[in-house]
Length: 366
Image 1 (cartoon, rainbow, N blue to C red):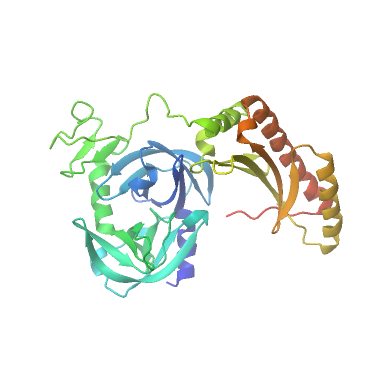
Image 2: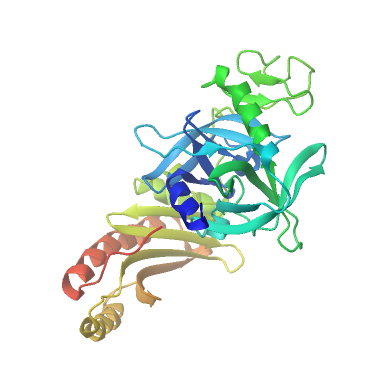
C-alpha cells in the first residue's frame, strides 16, 4: 500500500483524546472493541474526551492502564461503525523498513509522516522499542505506527527532545500481550503492576491500594467521588460554561483551552495567564467563492464592528471569526456569563446570516 491508501484506511479509526492536562491520539481496534493509547495521554484521568471523523465529542471511560509499557485502553463509542484495522507482527520487521506514523501533533488533525525503522529493537529500561526517523511530535502520542501492508506494528510513544527525528514506538507484541491479559476482565477498572506485571483489578486489589501479588502500590483508573476542579480564571470560565448549559468535561481541550459548539458555529476559548487575557473566538463560515460578494461583505463586517459592543468580526485567512476578549481581573462569573452568552448567540446568528446574505460557505473542518 502507498502512504495515501494507509491514511485513507486509518482516518476513521484514529481518535482524538483530550483531558484537562493536554491532548493526544488513540486508535480503535475492532477485534477487541477498545481504543488504544498511551497511559501518559490519559494521565490520572479515569474519563477523557474523545472525538473522531465519524462521531462528535464524547466521554470515554479509561478501563486499563499500564505505566511500565505506557499503554491505556478506553471504552469505544457505542452505536458508531468504525473501520477494522489489523495488528501486524513485530518479528517480521527489519531495520530500514518503511513505516507511517499517524496522529494529531500540535493539534494538526490526522497528520501522517513517513519514514523508516532506524533500529527495530532499541532497548530502553528493559523494554524493546522501534526507533524510527518518521517525524513524531507532541500530540502523536498513542497513535499507530503502520507498516506498508497497512498493519499496526507499534504504538507511537515518545521522542528524544533535541534529537533529529528520534522517535520511539512500543512494538505491537507488547500491545497484544496487554490486550490478551485484559480481555477476560473487560469492563473492570484494571491496571498492570509496574513491578511484577500482575493484572490488578477492582476484584483483587489488596486493601484498595496494593498489588495482591507483590504488594506494590497500584492505582486503578477509578472515577473519583468528587471531581478535581480548576482554580483561578480557569475555574471561573468553567462556571460560566456550566451556567450556559455546556458540559465542561466535553469542552476541555488541554490546559486553559476549551471548545464548544453553538448552532453551526464552533467557539474556542483560551486563557493566557502570561498576558492575563481570556479570548473567545467563534469560527463562523468561510469567505464566499463569488468574488463580487467579497467587497460588500468587507463593508458589512467593518460597519457591524461599529454597531456591536464587546465583539469584533474579522477575517483569519478564509475564516470569518467573531471574537471577544476579557481581562481576567475584570471578569466575574456574572459579567462573563453575559459576555459569552452574547458571543454564543451572535455567533450562531452571524453564521446563518452571512451564508444567506453574502453566499459565505460552510467552514471546512477536519
